Image (cartoon, rainbow, N blue to C red; front, side, top):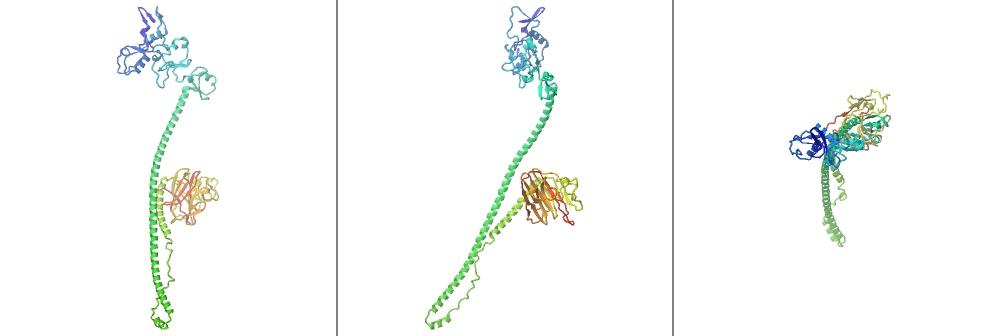
Length: 568
C-alpha cells in the first residue's frame, strides 16, 4: 500500500480509490452531496440508471449535475498512480490490480470514460461492452480507453510511443514504412502519404495537407450533392408526371373504348336496319311481281279455255257428214273473241337492279356523316399540340419576301433572284421555298396556315438534309411530305401526284406531325375535314416548308400566313 507522508499524518492510497471501479481516481469529479468518483465511472453509472442518484448515499438529483474534474484531487491521485514520493509501508503487500491492468476488477470494463457509442472509436483492449477510446497509439496500432491507456503512462518503454487522437481506421491511417500518420495528400498520385513519404518519394509532386484537400473535396461533394438533389427532384417530378400520364392513358383508353363501342354499335345498328329495309324492299317487290304475273296468267288461261272450246266446236263440224246440218249451224255460231296481242306482254325478272347498291350507298352516306363527326373530334384533339412556327430568312429563296414577325411570306416579282455569294447551302435556289426556323425532331406538333383565295401554294414538311439547289422533285423519297394547289386541284405529292376529291378548296390548312409515329396529316380547318395523311419513318428533324408560288399579273399575289391556332 502506498502512502504520502506529511508532518503529523499519512495519506493512504485507499483514500483516493473510486468506490465504483476500486481503482485510484482517474479524472476525479464530485457530486453535489460531496462524494467523489472517476468521471468515466460516474457517467457510466448514470448512463445505465433510470434515475440520477449518488452511487454512495443514493441522493437523488432532479437533473444530471454539471461535472468538472477536481484538479487537486487529480494531482494527488496521479501522484499515487506514478509512484512519485510514495514508499511501501513495512509488511504491506501490493494490492492486486492496483496498476489498472486488464485483469483488475472492473478496470477493463468500467474505468476510463463512457461506453463507445455508434460512430465512436472503441477501445481495442476492452472485453465485452467496449469503452470509448481516448487515444490511439501509432506504434502499437491500437486504440485505448482511459483505463487501458495507463500502461502507456506508467511504463517508460510505452511512454515513448506516439499517441494521437482516436482514429477510426488506424491501420489505414498510418504509413507502414515510416509509422507516421498520413497527413499529406498527393494530388499528382491521388494518394494520402505521411510527411516522410512527402519529403522523399513525393517531393516533386503537388502536395497539400489532408485538411485542405478534405475541405476542397467536401466543397466539391457539396456541389455534387446539390446537383444530385436537383436531379432527384427533377426525376421525382418527372416520375410523378409519368405516373400521372399512365393514369391519363388508362382514362383515355377507357374513354376511347367506350367511344369505339358506341360508334360500332351505331354502325351495326345502321347495318342491321339497312339490311332489314333491303330485305323488306326485295320481299315487297317479289310479292308485287308475283301478283302481276298471276293476273296475267289467269287472263291467259281464260282466253286459252275459250279458244280450246271454239276449236272443239269447229272440229265437230268438220267431221260431220250432214251437209244440211253444217250449213244450218254454221251461221248460228258465236263470233270468236277478239284475240289479245300477247307478244308485247312479258314478265320482268330483273326486279333488283341497283337495290343493294342503293342500300349500301345510303349506309355509306350515314357512315360518312359519322366519319365527319369523328374527324371534327380528332381535329379538336390535334389543336392541343399547337406549336409556334416562324420562318427562317436564311433559307428563303431570294424572290420571297417575309414579314418582320416571321409569319408571312409572299412572292415579289421585282426582287432579284440571282444567287449571291453569301447564300451558302441553306438557301433554296431557284425553287420558291422557305423553311421554318426550328426543326421538329420529336413529339407531336400542329400549326395552321392561312392560304385564303390563292390559286397556287405548297405546304408540308421537309428533312433538314434535302436538296436546296437546282431542280427539286417533291416526294417522300426526296425528303418532302407536301400538298400543293395547282390548276384548281389539290394534290398529295407522293411517289405519284394523287388528286384529292374535295367539294371546295380549303382556305386554311392545318398540318399535324407525329414524329415517333411517322405521320404527317393535312386538314381543312374551316370544314374540320381530313385532307390526306402520309405515313413514313422519320430518321432526322423535319422542318415546316412553305411556298407561295409564282404570281402573274397580280394573280396569286396573296401571302401565306402562319396563323395562331383557334381552338374549336
